[in-house]
Length: 159
Image (tube, rainbow, N blue to C red; front, top):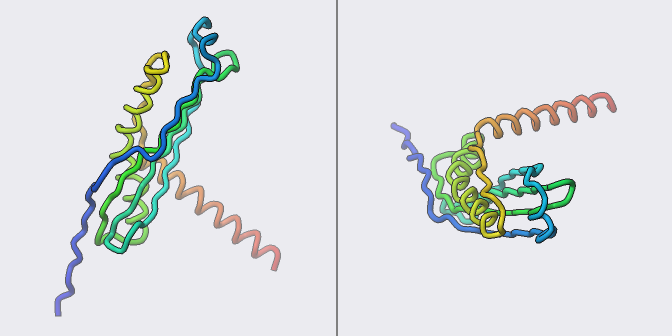
């Protein structure tokens, strides 16, 4: 009796902007200052199963804050989302696909939106460096395992 091999499938269904925001509270005064900003980039991903047909929504959130002399020059927030059909992949492999492959597809769209918003806001383009989502995923996995181990140690000490 041969077991049926479940076909593994990963397919992008749709890419869309879920949320987008640009603020430049210090304009026009900030344009008179020398442009040597301190730039902070926050990156986050989340995913949700949206139906029983293997469709998942993955949202890549990027927030960039640029400050000149402690004054916020601009704040950009982009939530780039996509619907991905994933079948035949489960457990840790599914979490890895949702945390690495999908964000890798979404990132160039988010980067283009951020660049365009900054230029339209009167600022130089922000060219985000490529992101290694595999490394970020491994880092988050190691961190959650370390936290779980600490929780187990703490629980063992209290009993």
